[in-house]
Image (tube, rainbow, N blue to C red; front, side, top):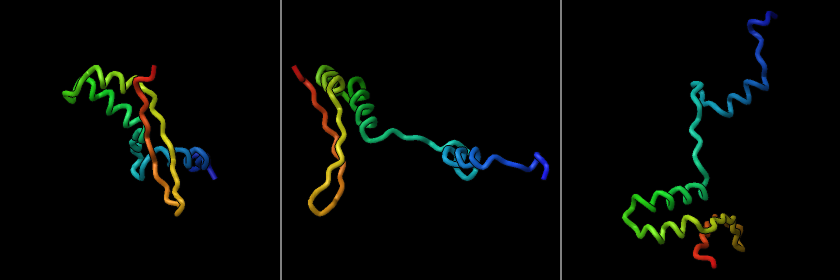
Length: 85
């Protein structure tokens, strides 16, 4: 078999994780926590809300939790702590 038709399987599998069937790069979206951080940061100047309060919230601590109840149901919780003195 000539080198012209040989492929590196590991390289092909790695590329398949990053591209769709047509070879275009897949869009990567932020997770829930990063989405909330970006939304709060955007609200400082764009949403017509109190800029000082939104700035304090943006400077707060963002934490993400996976929660389970007694029936095994899984939920995600994002907690923002701000105004910590």
